[in-house]
Length: 242
Image (tube, rainbow, N blue to C red; front, top):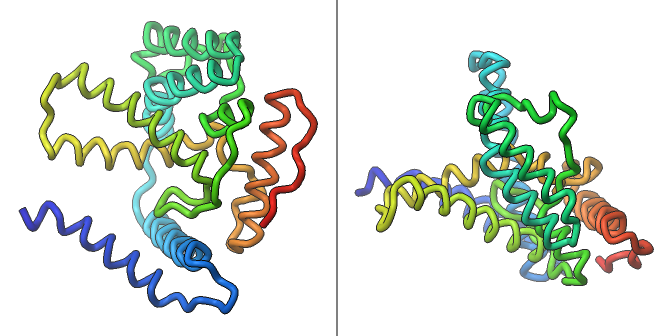
């Protein structure tokens, strides 16, 4: 039992060290203090993974592309279709599901992106953007462990949607009930999938990928506002207060 929970304990200890050893500034709220600690933790994890990647053997490009396409087909496309439906973009939702059908039926169950080869593409969006077009406010800005910078609306909506899709697949394959070990595996898989297909969901403005939290926050919120305005065909909203 201890061996199963030890990795989770190690992550919790590492998080605690980054948060509680991060001195609070005079004008910090508790959320500012938390966000800076998690931002530093995520940067440390990213540096560690980058260092490990430089010494580990590189996987064949065909394999990495195949696994990526498979995740996009089975997870990203249903998420994309649902988000487009919420935003009222029924044509794009139909294209996303058509892409899934083509890649499953003619692309080796999704490992090959036949739909793109045939010119069948759609602009991906996530549930945070879809809700933005419906006037749902962003909520507080947060930094999520491993996932990165988000707002409560963006993270919460995508978390719920991703779990609905993944557990629908799990229930269909394994039935009910499912074991605690299966749930733990799904949660770990969900984190890996979310990170690997984030670019396919249109979540992160490119200029928000910086090492300065204040700059990242400003660019993230501004980029999301611009994208929301494009999707809703409305004027740009007023700048978000920091």
